[in-house]
Image (cartoon, rainbow, N blue to C red; front, side):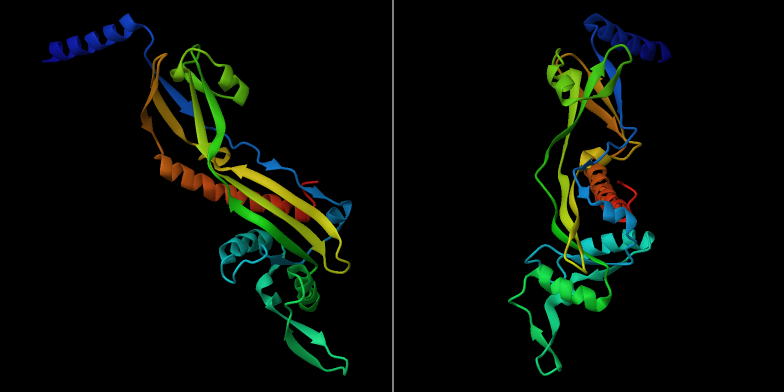
Length: 260
């Protein structure tokens, strides 16, 4: 029985040697790629100490629809000593009448920012963070790998390296994912000055689990996935959660003046 098993194994090894180009190659993701940040902030941001921030959801957002995102900002801001005030309080604004009395009236003639400025001052907020967009876009390729015969593994590469790699589909791999994009601005409550403009993008594949590993059976014609320590759905789900965390962390860094 042992002799037969040995002969079968020897036959398989000989087959690989005859064809000469079949091997098992690993692909490891060891680090997160830096997120894309085109944000700009005025020098005043670094010198300010923000205690309270009112977060204003995108225009037209229904109450409760943005609560999950608000909670994400709230957790990170609280870690940095900043209190978050929900923009939902801007639904009704307090006005002073000509007779000196105060009454609540619908503020429909006012823009979202105008209502927020009024309520922010009343609540003691230092600034308003107006969110223009905080959403995932369509899936696209955003990470590339090429097979290195000398080390028998897949190495992270640039888009151009991946495009130029010759030798068949088995010689390269690519990861596609959705990208999270955050657009917003920070507004001074006292004078309406825009102190920061946020433009941050984080493809989920840039935040893959750092212990992600996969193995491929490689030939010049193809690469067949034979093992992976995360199933695709689980890996991308974890990556998307991490992308949200990284974007919010970056916003908090900008507000604290650490990033500039």
